Image 1 (cartoon, rainbow, N blue to C red):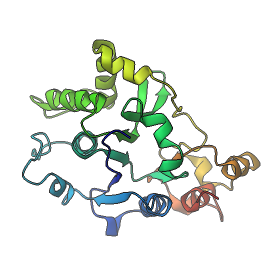
Image 2: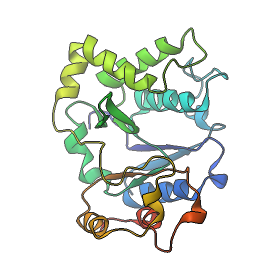
Image 3: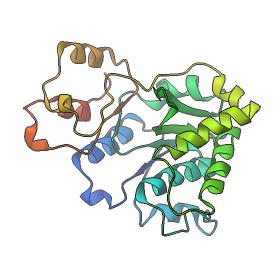
Length: 243
């Protein structure tokens, strides 16, 4: 994977001791399934330590909203150190070495494709080789975006920057257009308070898990756990490990 270091970056702002069950399950899944990778668990208090004296200017600010800070952090970490960013609500369903080289080597960058018609990429899982063209262009665009603002203009501001680079930069566009891609629209992708998570898995769910079709599950920490049934889909996905 070019010059990528085998880092897996996970972030829970308030501290991992207080992190919800899905975040604890996410951390365990990435650690258990990827013994050749270094799983780096960060908090708002420790995130900047990775950069040492060379702190990116945007991360030195204290006025960024938490969601925007997390977006900036993932881009800066991948540009500097390389590896994988995984949101703390993602479950590793396949070891990275079993699928990521095929999808990330040629372009030095990977994101799941087309989570919606208005977005080219999902940002909850990203891979980049340190210093590769796409991640460096995206980093520079992120820094420029936040240079003279305190608030984002759109919830999907990072996705919009990616689309702008795709249109403006032929090399960026050529890298992204290099196949293969994996769609972000998969059966085990859930938004906040998704009722299906609290129900028993269906026969189709069990078949998908048996065949291990998807490499990453995207769950949510925004749930009312008093609604869940015994052996609900949420519990099964959190505990899933590839055969």
